[in-house]
Length: 327
Image (cartoon, rainbow, N blue to C red; front, side, top):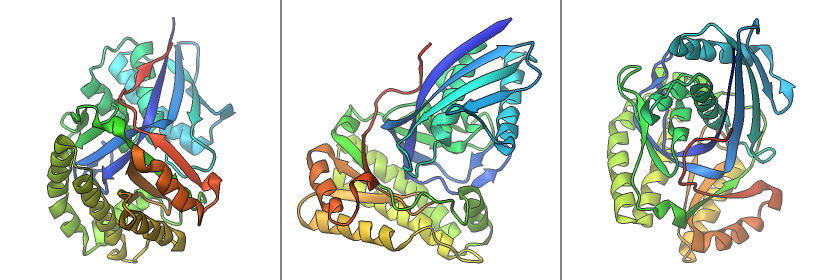
């Protein structure tokens, strides 16, 4: 018996960062995080289960994936098979719609789309909460890509209690945008996974980070409720810098920031002084993301053009809708 499903999921950017796992196997985070889901970047994935297949096959952007990624996907598919009570392997066709060299991790949208496509193909009937939990098993941030707009990931303490849910914003997300400044799309010397583990285990600043994340989450949710862009921006900027500070306290110390990262931060400060409020955040890499109100988006982009090529600047709206079945 052949069963298919196809889904689209958008990637997200954490405004309050997820940094460090409490459980590596189930991908349970050390802290809650909060993100926005982006309109510009998404993954479409079709899954076909067939008893005649002798293994799982993943075709990504028209090419068979490398063996190490195939092993990771098969482990995730084993979880799906257990849920669906089937032994059938799957043929997975996935397309990443991320601008070339965007320097944006696609694992969030990839596993969210894969989870939703499997749910459809096997008629699992998963709720949003259950789908979020399933996507989390592939990539932690994928749990947030099940929803649109502002999304919080509750860290929980086990597989059943770690999941994401939407944060009500009265459609305020429609007034906001995010600008990406692509500085470097080369492989990182320290991967996100390795960086998280190293700081969690060795950084003398890490406990300070954990002690203040809940305050940041509360402050951001208050800002969203009040539609207070200044408060939102100030908190997310400080949170991102605090996360990166933990890396400098690790043994050995490391950083993802480069000279151009600091240049973007300086331009953001200049834009604020010129009356165009905007705030930066960075993930595990040198590229900088800037949150801005749409009415000021072009002014910030114009300021960036003085120092960066047009191809390095990518703007995205925030999408209100979550993962969707498209076939």
